[in-house]
Image 1: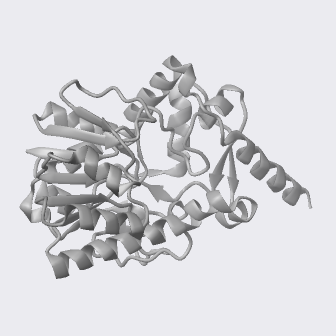
Image 2: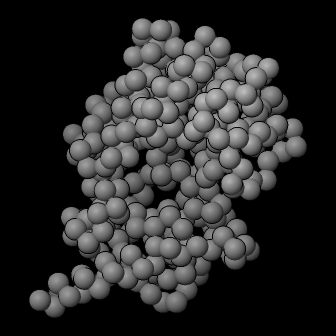
Length: 329
């Protein structure tokens, strides 16, 4: 099976590229080459601008693929480009969407693929919904062979997943004895998925005729509270974290960017029913617990100082500063 990954070197896609190569898939990765990824030698890599359809067509001229997976479509204009480029030329097109498309606030904390879509809080999710609608319309009217995949807060080597930051900031603050911000009272439920586990589900969907015209989420079955998630990050560092609980709405007023991800996603208890991915990919299972996965992430970051970005530290401090003032008043 010949497969094209558009992207292929990001947080989720690197693990998918490695597993595809491991399973003998003839894989080509097309991206801008801005991010270095340690991919197997068997992976053919093409550097180009996926935002320029003329350049992309030239770079891929003479190549044919059974499956195309696009990890980096974020708006309808990009989706339209892919429909024109790949319609009639591939057996399956996989769009990497997001589980944030599901209805917010949710009617029920257990999410299935039948849960309605709708997110009034987050533009990122709204654009993904628009892309999903466009692709499904193309499937119905043109026979475009789309499969929609929805990950949720999937992390890997360089990704410490917290609602306030996704870089090294939590580790840096914990090592200095500084507090972390946790939204609400920290008892709402959440699911973290390691990228290597997500990859098993995705690769199992490639070339899977039962997945054509379907949307499916791929997540772990392990359910944790946000307090437990932060405590396990601290455990990986050998530190007992100091947690400051702040209402999500208050955080959103101080920092609308972070607030969009809270009110549009992480502020609500969310548990995923993974029956569909297990039905489509019978051997799918998640083997990496969050305790194991975050320990691997921390170990990688400690060994690679160049990856220790702390861009979210200033935002964390500002949220804490305003909260302290509010509490004094």
